[in-house]
Image (cartoon, rainbow, N blue to C red; front, top):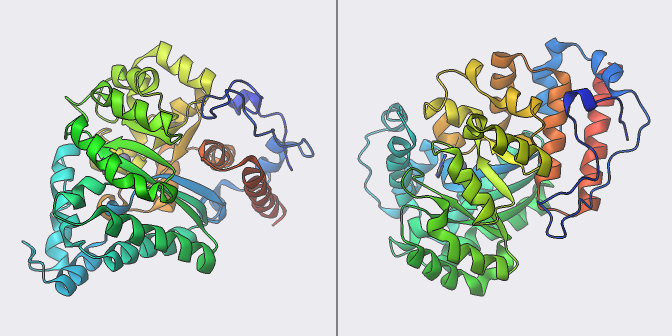
Length: 385
Ligand SMILES: Nc1ncnc2[nH]cnc12
Ligand SMILES: [Zn+2]
């Protein structure tokens, strides 16, 4: 494996304490030094960045499967299931995708999910996402789903989970991409509702690896879900939470200290709290950042103003993800290429971000090492060409 003098770029490879892992120590050993990485990076022309970003293997850790539902599939499922839509055409639906904040998006996003009724619908949606992700060299996806959006409409939770799970199994066999499911609680609903959802899901416990917290952030702080997350922790589920997308740094602190979240989804508002930044960097708590989402939901006025470069420079384990690609105008590679074009990030950052995505994933150390070797091989090939 390749490794070099990369510390100046805050490329943290030490075996420092790693809170993502339950044991409290990082079990993923650093790559072995065989090559001077900066020299290798220097041999790759910046003009080749779009090609490199597309070709490099990566993990996607922040994707809401309902947010991958393309307008064409919404219309096809509406027709298949006899669901009436308040839009005359795909184009008209797409033209409604102009958002001013998170809530304005969520209103349309939940309406779009109303066409999902049968196991095959959930299968088709997830299969389409996984095919697209595999074509973009995503080697692994940890996929959020919102069961309450469906159970509230009378769809049994087994229908949701079985359909999504079967798509993950088939995609692994047919496309070579691995995938795991993370059940998200809707934070605008009560903790009691979250407990009921957990109870319904437990017979299918082997089909999801963790729980998350999503939906309307402001006014719904993480501590509202302290007890249900404590129960999930006892059950050995992985824990993640959206925090600091629109909400204040205090929500990130409580996601860490009250919920014991192992990763923070978004987390970009951490920038306003120096002590929080220091902690996130020291503990290597990953942030799953979604640049095009932040742009479309007006968290940043432009991609050039996105703070991912600063978060990375501060030593945080930042990753790039698509969030709701069907609504925000791009899948993971679009997120990478548009962000890099707007901010001037370069070849070393591409390597760092891919590597962070492996570090932040919930897979075993051997699998991470295998992905790391694939990543190194791609960079070595680009350096030789
Ligand atoms: N960006 C986002 N924030 C919170 N909840 C979501 N559900 C789907 N996308 C979301
Ligand atoms: Zn999200």
